[in-house]
Image (cartoon, rainbow, N blue to C red; front, side, top):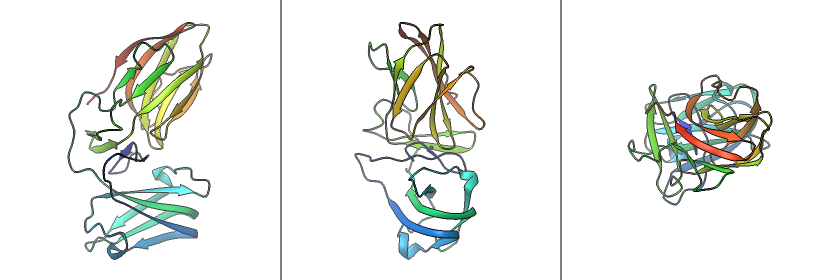
Length: 218
């Protein structure tokens, strides 16, 4: 998804890894498109993803841009509207992985307030294929519940176009880090965001987090 990146059109979010990864970054100002030649990015391959970030460093959804890679590995990026910000090319990981931790939602030990997605991925990347798209991450994400709901409910974790989304009940509050994550408070955390990939759910009560259910389809 990128720290969580999907190639072939879905998601994206990237962070620092503890192993090598190839990237190329360039800035654009008031532009409708940019061409980056193979001699500039140096990948010598078409196997890379494209991310864009606005002036505030916020990753933009894939609906905001598109790209075409030529036979000589030059890439032309087109923006949906005049764009100022950063274009980032990221070399893909070579093979799918099979570790149980891959994109899995888990509790942080006996903690009643912390959940992880892909615990261990900060040491070894994860790559899976879902519905024809590859999702990748090299970062663990963490959700910390800072206020619990009065009524029992569920927390859900999803991969969407702009990263990892934790949906929590309206009565709860929380913060997250890693995987370009965000927290959404909603009446129906179980409702999958448009284009989302569900990862798992966790019971949440007024006293803490409970049982976790793995809902990965891969």
